[in-house]
Every structure is written in structure tokens, then in C-alpha cells.
Amino acid sequence: MGLSKTFSASDVSVHSTYASRYIRDSPAKYKMPENSTPKDVAFQMINDELMLDGKPRLNLASFVTTWMEPECEKLIMDSLNKNYVDMDEYPVTTELQNRCVNMIADLFHAPHEDGEAATGTGTVGSSEAIMLAGLAFKRKWQNKMKAQGKPYDKPNIVTGANVQVCWEKFARYFEVELKEVKVREDYYVMDPVKAVEMVDENTICVAAILGSTYNGEFEDVKLLNDLLLEKNKQTGWDTPIHVDAASGGFIAPFLYPDLEWDFRLPLVKSINVSGHKYGLVYAGIGWIVWRAKEDLPEDLIFHINYLGADQPTFTLNFSKSSSQIIAQYYQLIRLGFEGYRNIMENCQNNAMVLKAGLIKTERFKILSKDIGVPVVAFSLKNRSRYNEFKVSENLRRSGWIVPAYSMPADAKHVALLRVVIREDFSCTLAERLVSDITHVLQELDMLHPAAPPAIENGHLKVAANGLLKVPANGVANGDHKVAANGVANGKA
Image (cartoon, rainbow, N blue to C red; front, side, top):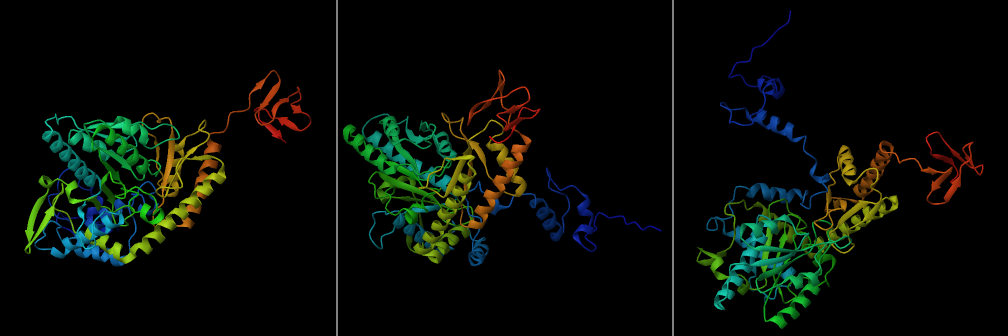
């Protein structure tokens, strides 16, 4: 005799989560549920759905850190409940942020004396950092134009068309005209010559990218600085440079120490960098540093007095956890210059392993540069049967998340795949990815076979060998058989 059980409205799990009535119900989607849910059931329901997400470490689309040491993760968990803006209550956290700003400014060769505090702040990411930098440039330009009795209502900013979307957001939100230098095929970053040509009296700054989102390439900040110095000299303007080093700011100092892109160049007035990218911290931390105090207008700064000392603050966000700031300080002192250099060298070496493997297939054109962010960007040489988007789609079956996308305007016909090499992407994974890409290509070749060779006037076209005569019996020179489908078999 079968037994049945009727669940009451107040019934909770009998033996396990999966024996409870909650598993039979659809989860709340549009309204808060009337009744509470047991904590183990709530956890299991959410955890089960999250299994359908991709694996962060196989997400090769993202520059964002996906692995940290357990000791740092413990610091993060222990400080999640500390609100960063409560400086009175958490003065040590504020001190750790200031130490990070000083170290990063020094890494970027800010011209301050030993023991002198640098000018900068922690942000939620590079997007907020760029907003703050842009506001500082706009306000300085406005103050200058007002003092000269000139119109100050039409500011503009010059960038490459390859900039990240946060620059477009800044321009739209804060009413600044965005003047973009178009990219072109085989030149996918801002051309400094064209950028300087676009500068006028209303240009608040030129933004250079150290590590393009599209292919990881560094823009030539040194050439931009030199050309802009000459134009400023000729015109009497003082147009400055901002460097968006979101991706490359924690790469260049360790892999390319002699590359001049930072405060060693006189027109570079501010730099942003993402701590949650190659700063090796989980998502939610960015940094903005200025060359000197005078580069950040005082009327944009708010002052908080705590423990008898003045604490300047300049942010768009307010409440946020202290955890990512503490994690950044951990990484800076835990790894030091030596540790960061070793990690970045490993990333670059593994990028070269992946690049070599892709070249060996003879199926791809490499669009990334050896000097830049450890990124491998590549496109198919032959797109007649399938494209990069198909390759990306098929790689998902093996767990890999490899994005396919098009280049910006004037190069939109160029599609590519991009792999970001992060700290936790090993040589073993690079070799495995090449193997899986090769397997995907073989599958796609079978699904999308090449069209049979064209036959004209009894001649078979073979590109590598010219024309092969095909008699009525289908045999050419005794060595080449043409099957019914028109495909030549035998020796080519």
C-alpha cells in the first residue's frame, strides 16, 4: 500500500533540502515571498542555479582577477562589514588606502619627495576613476577659460575609437564632446599624429590607452606627449594627457620598465589603473592618481576631519566595503616588486605559448602585439565557411569562454577572438586551449565542408598547381581521380 504525505504551509525540510516542499515550488522572481524560507533551502536553491554560470577561471573574456590566496580571502571576509567611508570609525583602513595610493604613484614615477603623500584615491573600478579624472580636467579647463574671459560651455576630449565604454559614459553624463580618432585595419589603436591634429582650444585633455580592450596593445604615449608639447608651444595652449592604464598599469612597470608612458612625461597629469585586473584583487577596486596636488582642483575635494587630521576625499560613490582596499594592500606588500614581476612574466610567457600554438595551426592571423597586455587576439584567415563567432560558440561546450567581437568603426569588418592571460592561466591550460580550438576547427570543417573545385571546359582548378586536365574517365595524368562529387583524390 502506497504512502503519501501532504505538505502543510508551515512544513520545513524533513530529512534534507531535496525532501522539502520548497523544491517543488518555482523560486520568487517578481515579488518578495510572503513566508520565510529555511536558510539551508535558500542556500541550496541559489547555489543550484549558480551552477549554470560559467566557471570564472575559464572566462577568458575578462581581465578581472579570478584567484587570490586564502589568507587574502580571509582578510576580505573579515572586512566586508567595514564601510570604507566611516573614516572616524576605521582610521586604519583609511591609512591602508593612502599607503596604496603612495605606492602606486611611486610605481608610476610621480614626482613627489620621499615621505610626501601622493594625490589620489581608491575607486570602485577604473570607470569611476576615469569619471573623476575627467571632472578634474573639465573643471581646470573651465577655470582657465573663465579667467581668460572666453566661452567655457563646449569642452571636448580626444580619444581613440578603441576606448572602453566608460569614456563614452563620461562624455555623455558630464556634457563633454567626444572626439574619436578612427582606427583602421592593421592599426587598431589611436594614432598620436591624428589625435594631436584634432586638439583645439576647447580640448580638456587627450586620453591615451595603455592596453587596448580589443587587442591589449599599448598606445604610443611618448610620441603623443612629444607632438602635443610642440603643438602647445606653437599655440600657447596647455592641453594635458590622461593615461587610461586600467589593464596595463600593473604590466608596464614590471615587464617594460624603460617604456616611457607615465609621469616621466611632463604632459601626463593623471593615471587610472584597475586593482581588480592585473593589480590581482577581486572585482571592485580601481585607483586614480594625479601628478601633483595642483592637478586636482581644490573645489572638487571634500575635507573630513578625523582624529585631528584633515582627510581630503574625492569620489562619486559613497558607502562601500573596505575589503578590496585591504586586499590591494595585502597584494602590494605580499608580492612586492619581485612577485608582481614574476607573475607578469609568467602571464607573458603563457601568452607566447598560446600564440605559438595558434600560429602552428596555420588557420589564424594574430592581431595582438608582443609588447602590451598579455592578451592573444586572433582572427580566422579563411572565413568563407564559418566565422569567429562560430568558433567561440563551439568552445563553450568545453567550458571555455572566449569572446568573439568586431573592431570599432572603420574596421568593423574585422572580427576576432581574444584570450586574456591572467595569473591563474597556466601553460598547461594554454596548451589545452590550443588543443580544444584545433578540435573545434576540425568539427566545423566537417559541418561546413569546402565547396568542390570548379571545373571549366574539362579542366580542374587547383590553386597550388595550376590546371589539371580531366579526361572523360576522370583520371588526370594517371595520378588524380575525380570522384562523383567533383573532389580530386590521390596525389596533388
